[in-house]
Length: 197
Ligand SMILES: C[S@@+](CC[C@H](N)C(=O)[O-])C[C@H]1O[C@@H](n2cnc3c(N)ncnc32)[C@H](O)[C@@H]1O
Image (tube, rainbow, N blue to C red):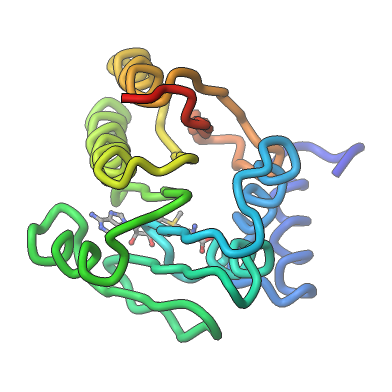
């Protein structure tokens, strides 16, 4: 939204989301990512990690259509969405990973917008963010997903994590979408599988 400060843009995205029926303004981040990187197509199987309240899921469902499949996971309960299956639980727990494996053993795209509960100490939060992102990468690698999108906070072990995405997928793009808040130094890593194993 040109001509506004970033906080103003963030509020404007919030109002726009409400007006257009999206559950979170982060919906526009994913639209931006889709516009640049074409990660979803008709019929894609998508895993949405850290999916509550469901903004990304709404957007992904629009792109994958009725032939697609979407499974979302979050610590929080997510209100039902037509065409989506949701699991409530902590992805760091084995039982939740197993439930995800049962519902979605395969995936074309794994998208993760997971954020830790913020402690106020940036280096602690950043380390937790990398931990969650590494988990998402592991889930994408297990399924040999073709696309991987993941939010991660920049900081000390960011480069190492970024390199592990490159090691798995063969390439990565780093994006700071317009709908991000000013205060955070979060970026999105977007990878398309180039490597064969
Ligand atoms: C920024 S929100 C996601 C917003 C979502 N993409 C949307 O568009 O509605 C981040 C989410 O990550 C979830 N989360 C954080 N740690 C998690 C974990 N260990 N397992 C599952 N979800 C987690 C949080 O509960 C929170 O809902």
